[in-house]
Length: 253
Image 1 (cartoon, helix red, strand yellow):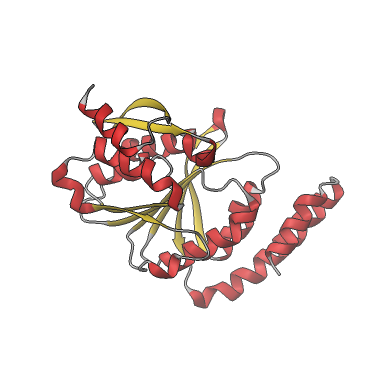
Image 2: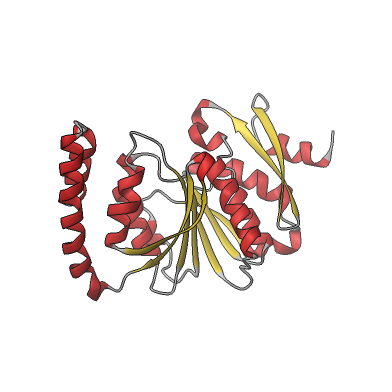
């Protein structure tokens, strides 16, 4: 049995089904293992939006050297691991039951000499964010905008973690029926300056760069967005999309 297989055996249950994938980003070879288990849910997959964010870092030659980074919804840990290899001091976060998968991929991909720059922590949006600092240089997230139930907690978490100097990169795949488009076009702009910096048109994936709005400007921005919201609600009503209309109205109460 190889050293990598030994590490995986010690990290996972003996009966776990493990899928392995290899990637090349920014000159680094990543070996990512996924625990295929119903308890892992969506975290058992390597989503295209995560690959797109890694490719964006590669294309833009982004360095995280000396920077304080936190990744939300790390899943397999692919994005956060790459950020560590690119020099960052990185905190990878997810639900408690996902951390074993992240730890395993960290042990496979991060050299011992770099481990002091990385930690893995549980973070439940809307509940635990106050346990984390507010001085991050970067916040990363890939395909974490997929359920409208989580959107208020996600925004609350982003608002706590970010300051005016924080750069936030969100890579999102737009899907019908989950409110991901109004989340980016209506909800996020209430608190963040949002810019689309990369697109994969064939996969409906967009990479966004966000910065936090000065609190003095939020009231003015909110008034403008409420007007835009009323137009969107009217459009949804006219197109008989009552669920979107209800979601948008609830979001601004």
